[in-house]
Amino acid sequence: MTSADLVLAPTDQQTPTAALLPAPDAQPLELALNDMNVLLEQHGHVIAVYPANIATAHERRLHMIRSMLESDRIALLKVDLPPLGVAVLVRQLRQLSVCDFSVGVVASAARLLSHYIHAGALLSTVTRLDRVPVSLKTHAKSWVPGAQFGVLANPNPQLVKIGTGELSGPEFGTHLLVAKGQLQSDWVTETMAPAWQVQAVHEVALPADSPGWWGTAKMIEFAAFLPDISVVYQLVSSVRREICAWCGNELIGDRCGLCSAPLRGQQNQTNGSGVLTRGTPTRHGS
Figure 1: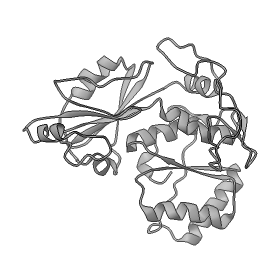
Figure 2: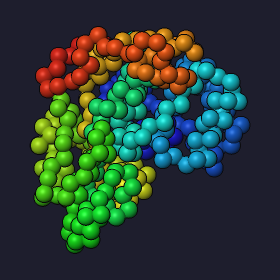
Figure 3: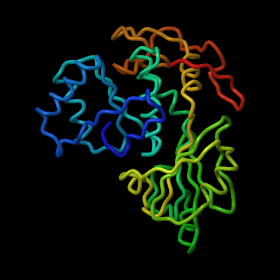
């Protein structure tokens, strides 16, 4: 992980922590190469997850390390999610890493699991929001004193003015993470959470990059996610596994999580529906 505040506390004793891959101005290249070598020796592979809005120099450092080590055991996963959504995804991948999945399946599961994370925020203004489409009419409304907006960035972008509409929530059981910025409101926990039928609400610290991502510090970020590792395991297990024609690792979906090569030949299929709904049966896999 590229930022310590995106590493959520584990939900059980089996979930491992994440290693930090610092920015170039925080660690010399020689030390970064040494740390990566140690991780490879200890674990065999490294899945490096980083947000799409990471600094260009930091992203170049990650690619430089992989190139200099000439290692096909380093997966670089660029994730286009809000900060809290990235943190949720990283924890789910940490949980999967101790299940009976190959490293290729765990790496390529990131794209699948991203679709089941409902990440958004309550904002006091959308004038600087450039991550979600905002109409000129909505921009004008944001100048009205006291106006607040519910924004969903993933899986389907959505924006509503509070009091005039509702955000579309997940159709399966979730827990909700809430990270408070400088906005005072109980809308997320008292209105949205019951409407989404979330099973539990957990408050966490606001990631440092969140105000920049959402365009304002007057906000409350949230992310609804699958809390049960058995459900996550079942979801990943339901997808047909293929062998990457380039690196030979297992993958699910249409692209290898380790080398990023696209799947060749027959399109990916699932053994079941691959879709979760309320009441979906679960089974343990860790």
